[in-house]
Structure formats: C-alpha cells, structure tokens
Length: 263
Image (cartoon, rainbow, N blue to C red):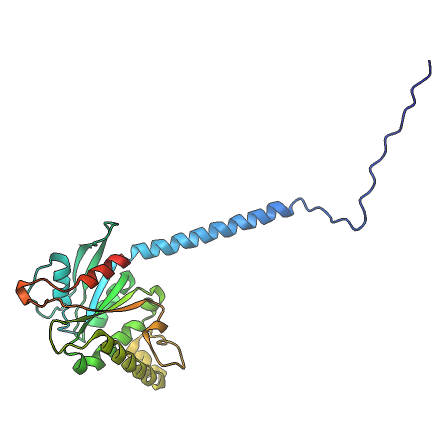
C-alpha cells in the first residue's frame, strides 16, 4: 500500500510594499470625534433654545404720552382706560391669540426721560421682543427725542446680543394729522444716521459716559437703514384709542398678530 503524498502548506505571501497599512484604531477614533461634534452641536442648540424660551417678556417702550399704558390695557382687557404718566412698570401675563395657546409677559415701561433707561436696563435681558410705540401725531415735534431713545436701545450690547424682534408701532392713527408709518420710518432712518455720525465723531470718553456699553449702529460707511440691524424690524399703524374713542374698540389687530407670531 503506497503512502499518501503530503503536500506542504503554502505560507501566505507578504503584502506588496506599496499596499496601504491598516489602522485599526483610525475608524473608531473618527467615529468618536463625530459623536463628540454632534453632541456639542446639540448642547449648543439646546442652550440657545433654552435662553430664548426663558425670555418671555414683550417690552412696551416709548416716550411719555405715546400711548403705552392704554395699549397695555387694550391688549389685556380690550377696554378703554383713562391713563396717566407712569413712574413704574406695568406688567401682566398676556394670553397670545395663536394656535400654540402660549403666553408672554407684557411689560410697559415708563417713558419719562429720567426713568426709561433705568427700567430698560432692568428688563432688557428678559425681552423676547420689543414694541416701540410712537405718537404719530406728535412725531414731527418729538422726532429727535424718539430717535435718541431708539438709538440707545439699538446700540445696547445686551439688546444687540439677544437681537429680539423690534416693532415700531405708529400709534394714534385715528387722528387726521397722524404721520404714516412709511414717513416715520424714513425720518427715523435719517435721524438715526445723523446720530450715528455725531456719536462716532464725539470723544470716546464722552460718548461712553452718555451711552454706557454702546456699540456701532448699522454698517459702517453706509447710510443707515433698519435692514442693517441684527434683529428683524417691522412697522405698523395702529390706534389704542380707536376711531370711536372710549365707546369703540382699539385698532390693534396688527399688533396682536405680530405678538402672536413672535411668541
């Protein structure tokens, strides 16, 4: 009986010299890095959303007698109220008229020159949105004061950082002599541009003493317009008093819709 011929096992041939080297740890490391990046992105997104959701105040600001307190009362109760100059804030929970059934805190700030910045500093960090109420009848006379206060708001570092939506509510449109929202926007842009030039030319120590932590308004080297701001700015025409006065309803539907949109 012949013995079976045994074929020796062949040794595996070495890989070619130009073959790529395998890096078994490279794939897990890249996956780990990707997971860390995703986790950080989610945390940042969550942080931003939390900060925004924590800002639930809608600030009603403006000069004295612009109609802030009556607008506040109309939004809350729809009823007409005789008002007087406020020396402190008025605040209340406002149920928004939208599908979300959400609510915000309405805060009407005093408009007196000696108080308005003090109260703005107190509530600006909580502002989800700002409604700047303008007396459309007295606008031509008060334009410089309106622009000055608006400038102080728009160059505030906290306001610029949070960039809450801004509504310029041109109130008292029930009066025949009221200026249109388009004219008010154009005049404010010109006046704010003049203020910007004046402030930038002033000594830095003097400017900082007047405006605190102020920043540049709009785009340097260009005529100012509201589209240059980091927040969205809208203009509406409204009347807290309404065309029928005390007996009628207010013309604030556009304001209510705007608040519902930003809530």
